Length: 123
Length: 261
Image (cartoon, rainbow over all chains, first blue to last red; front, side, top):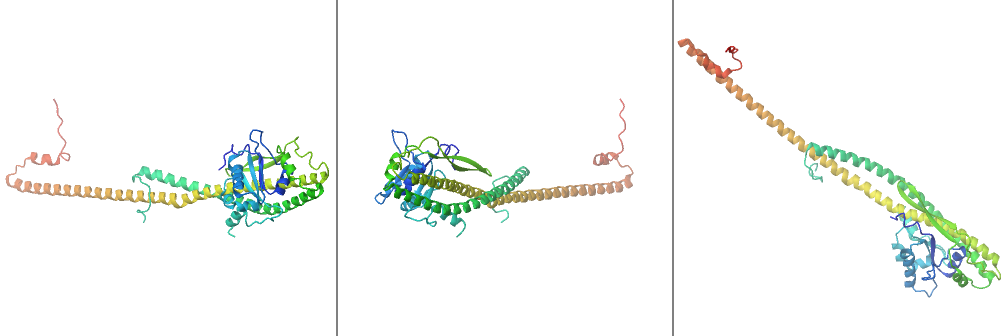
């Protein structure tokens, strides 16, 4: 279980997504770059050329390394590429949320959390 | 299997019987409390899952509208603004903070979004043209992110509750199926052992009583015989010595004479 101190200072959102999703979310004002020495961005733009290892590394960084991120948003079609990682991620913090993208409509059947919901209701 | 079942290693004494009874009572109280807790959590859990389902569907719609407004921006600005925006993002305006809610002793975090004042990374975006669309797009996306944050807190609560309910149910089952039967077995075992001891004790007492009875009967018979013999011999020489009878019946004898010095 998450301890109290664990989520006190989690105040940012992180995004892994295609360019359009990132642009929109950054416009909403969630983008953050840490202080100059390491300059870590809290978003990762993924296109067809980005290889899966880079996505996994970013996912790893956002979920385990950084302690200031409370929610990780990830496009569903990108989550599909690292599906095993997303499905085996069961921690409460940070929360991983699959979001639809412009080119890929949202499919509730693939969502790891919704699948758990369905399984619990025995459907 | 009453005595042979799983039981705790205790000596069958009255004291441990008392301890076991107290333990059984405690286990039953704990079981009913945990059961109620689990029910309360499950109720909450079902509510949350229903809300997640709704929120996910809503998110799909909201994100669609947001994408549409972004497309408007791209059209109005005339070109892709993605790169420019990625480069100008510096400090988050839209942030979240976590607060806690207590549901039957379980702390559920809930995210709350807030806007920090004073920093605007995109002051120059859409300066040339399409500023209005950019503004609208920002608002749409801000609303979308709010919906996402709400969904995220529901999801966090879902994950935590899921875990807690599993733990609580495991405890309820452990008490119901392991601890209570075992304690009951122990109590049964102690009771049967104590009964056994009681029966042994009773038998022993009966034996002792029997023996005493037999002894007194034998002594009586002996005395009677002696008396008869005495009576027979007294008829012959009429001089029965009282000392003879004295030691056999000391208490029942006539009172001693007072001794005067």
